[in-house]
Image 1 (cartoon, protein in one colour):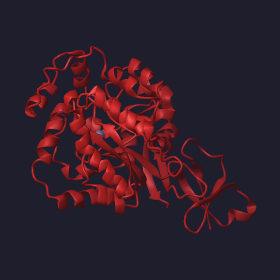
Image 2 (cartoon, rainbow, N blue to C red):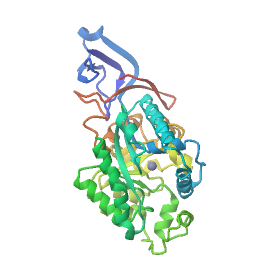
Image 3 (spheres, rainbow, N blue to C red):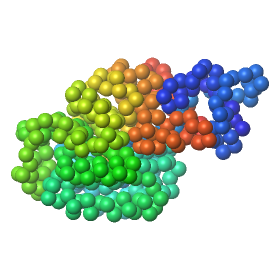
Image 4 (tube, helix red, strand yellow):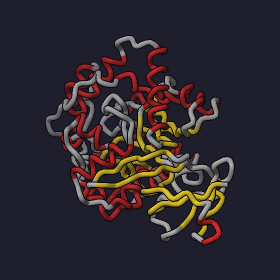
Length: 385
Ligand SMILES: [Zn+2]
């Protein structure tokens, strides 16, 4: 048995009463939380800092880990997409992709991350996930802007979902983004996840070009579609925001909107009423668009905010603490408590993993980290378990 306490203990949503002690069994499972007493004082390890549950990374693309340092910064999303496609066609071997995904997985574990929401377009990362100490929820991502290709695009990707299941890995289906996935396909994927009680995810309003595209203004996606030789002359811009166009395809189900850099107050209010989580990936936003979301718009929605690293194609590390520090450096909208909640309970909840991760759960080992907060910067002091 191990008795642990610290200056503060954060349980995933709030701080515990001062003097609380965590009791762990021999397998590092949380046995109970008790009040400090004279009898256990000698046995209690007193740590300097804040104890938190293991971190949950809400958004990653493990299969892109081999692209670290390969993608030019500040190109905007259409340029980024083009570079990713070119790099993926440039002949990296399966071995390299596997090796880099493995290294990224270890890096996350060492950074205190115990569970991850991860996007997959193929099966390149499945074996890494299967042997990992980290729990993954994989979103099998499906694209297809032309409604005429809906069935074909679904049939191309659905086998990856079946493969995940056969490997005993958790997952759901996810549309990529509103500019790359037709309304019909988004609706179909949302319906599938709803029927199977699975969380949904979509990249949302990551670039201003997306807004221009939906309002029928000139935009940089034209370049990307020309490069892909995709004829989109049939596309009729709806004349409203992308989110407004597709939000009614959700059936009040858990949905993670990733990025939200160009979301307006009206967009945020609309999504908040629809059971949506808002996931921020600040380092990736700086890498690709060199712009951060207006965090003030999200202040009231602290129970629905998530934090993710995105992939190594648009980040130097897979470290939630580094993401938190970008927010602390650029905004004073959120308290430390809210940011810690965005690194733990909210992410677990958005991924349907809250019964095992993201908080201090009796009978479970959800990981424990020790952090310190000094000069408005967060630091992972150590991974306790
Ligand atoms: Zn992403």
